[in-house]
Image (cartoon, rainbow, N blue to C red; front, side, top):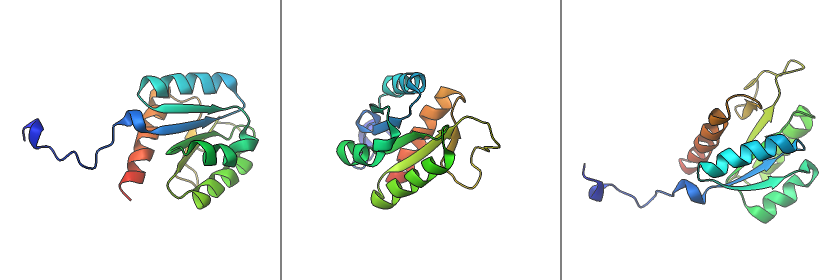
Length: 134
């Protein structure tokens, strides 16, 4: 099919996808934010996860990357609250693999924090596309 014939009515370029990266770990925020921006995402950094719901209200992200390393339980509750209050937002909880954390265990949005960052970028893209297909 020639390019001119491709149906582009429902296509949104990735540079318009807004991502909120929330973590008290400034190194993680810098690295993840840099790689997401380099891939064309619009990134907002949040260093105080206690202000998560307000930040989601203000910035209207499509995808939130939430660091659950300090408290996976609290982060999972925050993720559930975000998804309940903002059904158009996809949340990915990242956490270090310690204290028995099993990525993906019991929740489709848990992701290993220090895995390949290109995998995280790809997961953000997949999460956004899963919203678009709803």
